[in-house]
Image 1 (cartoon, rainbow, N blue to C red):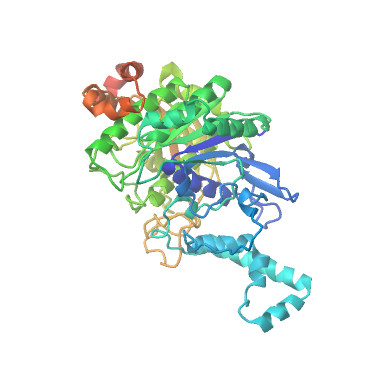
Image 2 (cartoon, rainbow, N blue to C red):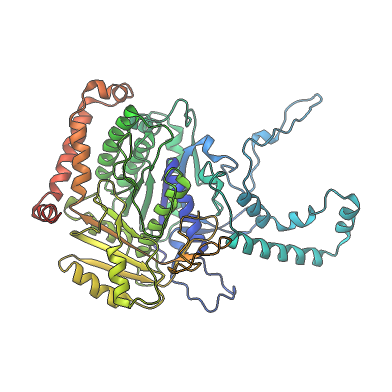
Length: 569
């Protein structure tokens, strides 16, 4: 059984994270007959991907994904994708007189990576157009034997694939949307766009604006999303649950929590987990925007947990609800640019790709619903994700020293944590990947020593995290091509191809710090602060009920263990 999952990406930043995640998964595919030196497949990609046929009878393999974003975010990406042929009304011109067609200049110029990707997808076309400027050579190309042409196409496709994987792209200035580095093709049912809202004008910045998009009568978006949900779930043989990436700090949080509520009603026995990323640096951030972010986050967290979703906030700043961020999470070995979502979302995606391996393996995989039930025991619905990236591989380290150093290097990606390893998790799922030797039994022993009273699930995967292009260049120069720390700098023309990593997905009483901050700040707000949200349809009683729910949630963490953690600090 595949134990399939359906993934939602709702919001612009969530789609940034998701694009990296699908790229990372695709980079770890093991192809039959690829000559990969007998590499054994460990990851069951059928959990998150689906096989299908397009109208030409060609086999496709696409993410089981439903993505929602503003229409302007798609840039060069077609909403229906490119794997399936569609005729649109725009192809037919109903006019009996002379027609003059004017080709509109491309609004969005494709970057170097997308141009290379296009050549990889259409090698025959590239061969035919190599010397199109010369009519003589073009005529000669047309006379080429078809077998020779196909051979050239295969050769070109092979070289382009190699180039794309190993090529050093400089995309920091040319990535403006997640579509600018998305490598995988999407199914026509995957993309949904929100119309009438924009990134800089008429912004979808309030929770209730998003929920209204979905819940109002005759909502076309709700009908569209329900159709897509049924399409992906009904073809699944053994649906284990749902991943949701959601921007909870703006109106997309209202949309996401409304979708989550319907998921809960229809698929109550499935595992549901929501990863909620935050920007490290907003393009425009002031006190009023931070206030909206806070209110939206409170409403979204409450609605998501009421729908039965385990909520995992992700942030590389200490407090994403402040108008000025003072402290960024520093991961040893990384030199990411905090103002670029292209960089920060890559860190989140690497953590997500590693942590979710617990329910994406061919063997010894735990179902997602088992993970979420365990994490949210006693009603503790907010969990934490910690990451070591890259794992500190050093040739001179003993196995035990490596594992101790890896655990000690774990840094929380949750807001308002002290940044150190989680000291007293109630339960945790630890995943180690990319280590040269087998460490699972030793890791179990080390984790038991560190956390003798904590139920821990331990998994080891030999497959490293494949960070080939278009993954950004966020590793410092002393990390070599294969993720080892070196005494000499890596050659500038070489990028890092793979790294080892470790994650801990846990429930811990340190969540009280974040939840208490949200509650305390929210209690101080009055109608003047809430007026835009009230105008958008939020009821005062709903806001009061949300704060009461938040307080009850804190009470489920705030016990003797929490006091012990606080004292230890």
